[in-house]
Length: 299
Image 1 (cartoon, rainbow, N blue to C red):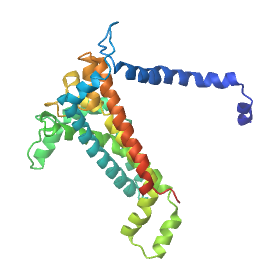
Image 2 (image 1 turned 45 degrees about the vertical axis):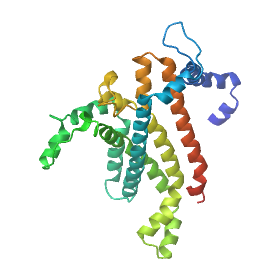
Image 3 (image 1 turned 90 degrees about the vertical axis):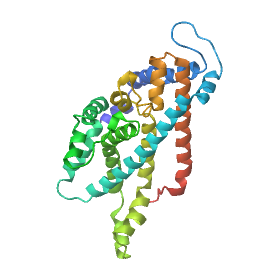
Image 4 (image 1 turned 135 degrees about the vertical axis):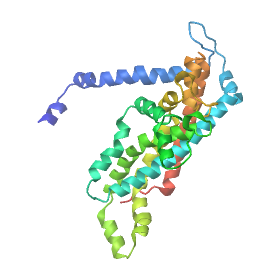
């Protein structure tokens, strides 16, 4: 009855429902995106005055050691975060797909950090990683281990942020993999059992190939999300004066923020954003192109 009512709805009714979402997309996504592309080719630094300078911002970026460092830090962050998000998500999904008592509780427990505020979690871990009074070093001391420098050293600061990011996000990928595992037909496992396959062979010859579409989706989302990291870096390294020590956690998005709202170089920051967009787009396209070699859609 309700479906028939919807089919009889006028175009005005349909458009009135679509208009709020479309307006929000236009105002907060499309127009800022187009504006960023335009500003990247200007020397705009706020106010009414600006000048078209062509690709000069991009030339400055190619020669900037700070941008090279932020790009390197971002790639390091993406590399370690994506690998461990996928591995931990898959490991816990396989374990919690066994159906033992308490699996629902543990699934909720591991997923819960994903719904928490990144700002709140970052503040909490800033206290936990405090070199003197933090819980992390107290735990190490109770185990007879030397204290760690955590966020106060350029050698360990990025690692500390990666640990927090993994704690927050691996539960999300665990849920995705759980959905993928439960969509695999039991008849495939029965056939593998009849053929005498052990658990090792069943996992690598049945589970992983059948899980490849899910893994492809998880990897794509993980890479895009890791390139956009900002909250943890901002909150755990000192806010607007952060990115340290010695720029060791200064990722590209944080550098865009600094150049925009600290140095007021909006044209330069827009050019950085465009380069980051091109990098993410290129990696995503390569992934889509190469998926034919390892993703199995036949069930």
